[in-house]
Image: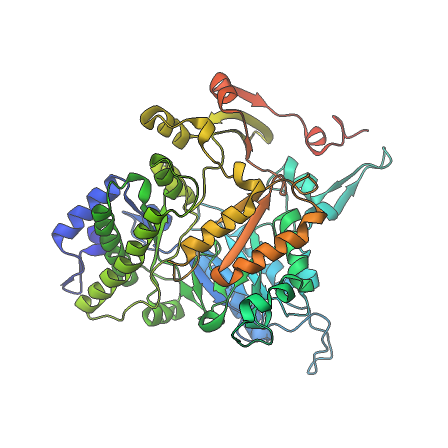
Length: 538
């Protein structure tokens, strides 16, 4: 802690009393810094930032090379990246100087994807990458279907007629199978031209243009893709934030400046007793992140310059669903939660600004971003980000010796709530329970977003494509609901059950999981998983 908040150039960044209190909050898991802070703790290198935000700034050979270099430099520190490719000209355009034709942005996305595959972040983990493109770009039809792995047939049986395997089949059998953009999350950027009648605000505009924006052909196609494959997602950038199209890999941090940087940490509501303690945790966490903007090493000079200009803080929340369950509340933003969120908004700004003034440095341009908190949520044994519990119990799949195995697991938070607080497991609303009521999930995200000045990383679970609750007949209704909430969102993603190969978690009955706990099973071969028959010889 002293290496981050202690003395720098003769100045004590945080008082000794504050440092000791912050240590206690971290020890009690009431505040947990972002994963890169934890990984680099005690190491000579200080790459504390989880992610970097990039933009292709001009359409030239030199910029293709420069974007690739910037991406590789960031990934090698252990940070994920996001790139907005919207400036690149569409494929097929004639290049006047050379007489050739433009390849469009998607091949550069493929290039960055393969850089990510071959660069282990910080030498220890797989890369996290995000790519976005304006909804008005001419290559959107290609971009929309770039990850349609189920339609991309790559192997046809020679001995048995009619047998074939798609990229999705092979991915399910071997998660490490290479598929197009498999290291990359993708989204379309939506701006005022989509939101309003003519790109400008009018007094009746938001409601008056709902039908128009919900029925926009590109938006409808995006909704169908999201319902069927989970991608592309949606990046919403309106009004004064219209140019903030840059996102990190998990999309919670936003910017309009190339080479901006994340600076993350999360307050765990599930472990906080009362509002006064919450105020104290939020204040100290905000000060900690300010110190991080002075201490963290960065991959190249421009990131230092943009960090000094913006000084973005990404203070987030986790354990929200645990907090609600302990109070016997449903998955909705209750009046009490509104009050706590108001404190989160107010104190994060006042504490950070006062600390910056004390240190005679520039104030942040943004303060709050709610990350998915996957690793640190597991560390704290709490619900991640704003997500509801995935399931009270599940079948966990994993690869061992290149074979899929699984075991039944009782969710640790469920176990904690049931055994310590007497919560009835049958009354816990899970992400899968809510998958048939996606509007409640979207409304929850919008209600929390009202208090967040950057974005929220949250993925809404849906029933599988082709099921009774999720099929072609649902696309228009889904589009209308999402279009209605879009002005209050900064982004949106969903995951239809079974949409991607290698899905690690499948819901299981709570009592069955208790009964079979600790037993490891070996799964059937790929052909049975994909429905082609036990030996692929149907």
